[in-house]
Length: 141
Image 1 (spheres, rainbow, N blue to C red):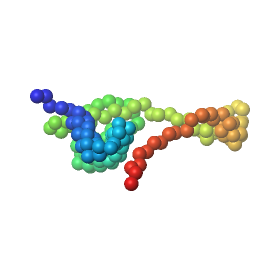
Image 2 (cartoon, helix red, strand yellow):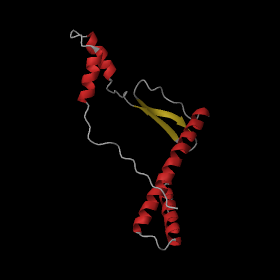
Image 3 (cartoon, helix red, strand yellow):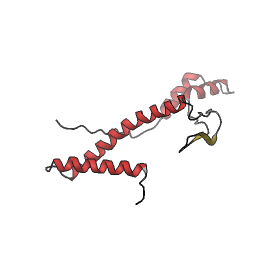
Image 4 (spheres, rainbow, N blue to C red):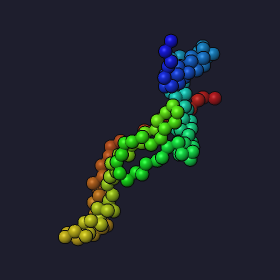
């Protein structure tokens, strides 16, 4: 018998948990099972994020790995234990549009555009149709 991956074991545990809960509640329909599955995965994800951050902070504190400097792109081995390797990858810096910086550049240019004018035009040029969607699951009492 082959050993399952960590991810496969977690998936099986959640499937077992959903099946056990649904079996206790015979009146539940397929849509209740789907919502329950999503709620469990959402709860696991929220808890996992915090637990993972704590574990990474502990590993850094215990010198399990050395955090790379984020100023230059790299992809290298940054830590090793008896059973694991920790790899670090730093990408090219992310460049974001900055209206204030554009205003400074245009004011210093040969056109001498006043900063408030540039900021006003940038605001007018912003377009967007859809907002962000956040869904949440709330159990009924």
